[in-house]
Image (cartoon, rainbow, N blue to C red; front, side, top):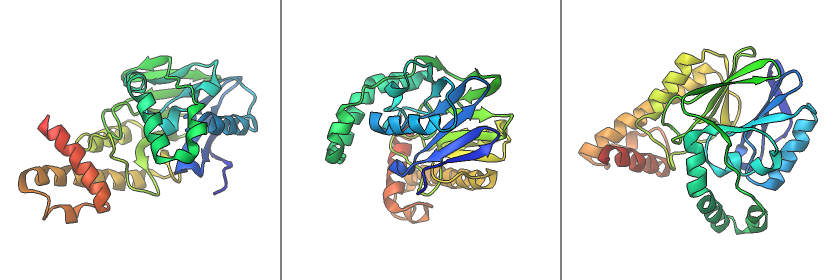
Length: 264
């Protein structure tokens, strides 16, 4: 994978990384810029800083799309800076950041030293529904449309460039990740995003840049998952699980999360 910036709108860039197939974003205004997500370690963040500096020397504001380690473990390297996120993003990082680190070290022991270097820094600027940032004369709208991939997904809208950064509400190249998701809400949240942001270019949290038709198709898959999970809650799994649009391990995780919602 060629980890070079792709300009997807006027001075709006995406960098797709081999690590986790993660997308980071860069929006450049006059005298200021915005960096979307900071990768999964200080080492990866320093690489991202060097890449940003190939485009602009301007000071930055940072946005974290949500509270999963691969999107915010690099925050400390971008200080001093305003770091924006949803209010629940801060709560979950403060509650779960160290457990995310420990679980990752257990899964990836070869990264222990790299991960132990990380200083966990949550956002210091928060909102609950909407915020608008002036990035060097360009307005970037931050919106939380509801529960979905996580409790705190942030969508960044760059209206003068026709670009939406959807975070992990949209996934390309792999099935959506349901680990701490809200499958019953996710389709409605994605529909609200599509209805509120009619832009042609949509950047997923991972994978290739997509268009609205791709996101509409993913919405339909997620709606099917929600409907099938409700059926399975009543009828049992055996006859229903074969109808899910994703591999069985992914489907079972989605079902378990949906059942958690239904049982609550």
